[in-house]
Length: 395
Ligand code: BEZ
Image 1 (cartoon, helix red, strand yellow):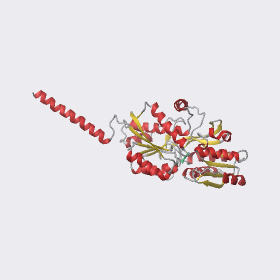
Image 2: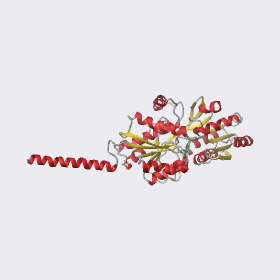
Image 3: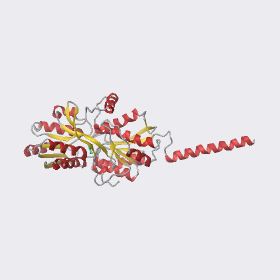
């Protein structure tokens, strides 16, 4: 009797223990069999749609290569088309954070949208990884322990192109871009290096994002006759610009320079107009590293497409989160542990291995590339291990 009553007690205790473990697990929302919720806020429509799709492909490719898991747990995706529209960004970020309760917010392409997202993520203490948007502020005055980036600052590749253009002997440059953070900060980065080296930007021209009525600007460039032109455009708008530049007869008379966003993923659409273009970026075709070879092979096999810089940045966002989550044993609520591991991670990227700066932005080589067919072929590495100055970041 005694024996049976004791075992009844212990059964009750075990049951209570299981129950309380269950309650603890549920209250933290992270029982071992629960999936990790990844919020992908990216453009699926508009001029940056292809960029969003490549980022999503890259992220999912890494997860698949990692056995379909992050931090040892299966992954569930929650997606929102942000339309590259800053006016809808707060509401869209709230859908993923408050309604879907994602563990990590991954996004986005457009700098203006990312700035609004980062505020929502920060106010809700949600971990955010930026897989493209270059807004300098994100790892500058708005830097935060919970905010990471696997792409670039707008300053980084543009600064490198300013150096290259000066070394080519150009003295007078005209710039043209969309009037928003990415465009304007790219121009500033270019100007900083170009003017330090003795060049002069004689005119800055802008048009609203995502307008593609380039004709009046091309007419003005022809009249100004600068030594060279520097632009920031990306996605479908970039292809249209390069075709218009060539059709206006400028390609053969005034060299065109840009950051690599002009030609990544767009060369096929540009056709002959893109041939020979020189751009600077943290990725290139023809990099001699094993990781890139394997990444490209798998990407082509999975998506029947060639990867570009956006796919790489998405892939690395997943790698970075894996580094953090693995250190926390898959517990997404252990934010301090995750952040510490992400801060010290060395990411084995297809672009070449990189680490993060104190402001959580990649310290990375910037390549000079030349367009050949549908490839941006590596020419040289004008700046190695370039860190953004992270002006205004107090972390
Ligand atoms: C941006 O808005 O930050 C951006 C968009 C496309 C390519 C590169 C940067």
